[in-house]
Image (cartoon, rainbow, N blue to C red):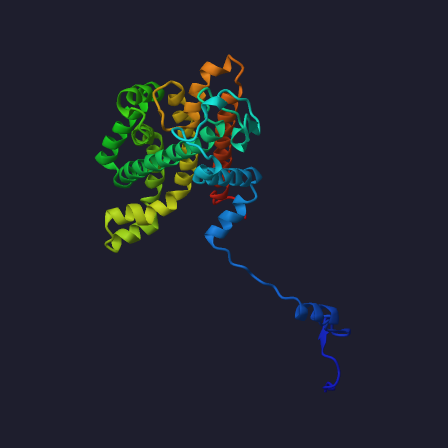
Length: 330
């Protein structure tokens, strides 16, 4: 009979008993002292973690935030507006910190032929240029989500009719039609320019949204919602749309940059924004007559801010595309 005080043994053969090897003291100490913590991250936290790894996108966010603050506080940054506060005797001054008679930092970027400081064109122009880009992109995606979502969800003849209408809009030449409509209808109105952008630009985004709805309408969560008696409108906008928001957000960010450039283009051609409203594109338009005289600052500073804004928006769009990619690792 085995002595109970002896160590427990395992028998590998009939003759040679082998003692069981228990855990070492070092392993026991490590197990008792080490705690493993599991952190659950929400979907937003995962997106932010992936987004902040994109250095150019983070730089773009900082630049856009500064531009937004500049637009909001334009009356403080620039003590003059297009109609008030400008000095005709300071016309055509190159960039400087002073002007005859007084020290004034508002001529840091120079002045135009009427004595308006370029700083006024930059700060107040940011308001209209950014507003046109953001609101036009939002309006475009609202139309695209409605058209693409309804067509992709219902399918059949509804899808056929809506896609044929979309195809007609896609065949229209965007820039010539934009110039024609702006010249005869807008009259320099910012609101009408935004509406024209939105009405002419939704077809491509609508086809993108439709492709996602065609996929999600056959998923189990959609079938479960139908079986529960949920209305079609609620399924389209409350059940499927959140799952299709990733491409919608990315497409919206890229549209903002496109609309800012489009607004500058029609301003440059003389059928966009008109004084007393100011924008970066209008500033470039007025600079055409001055650049040959050596007044380089008229075109350089508005063009530089336009370039910086569009690049920043594109960097943010690239970062959002990578961050919203479900296949990407956190």
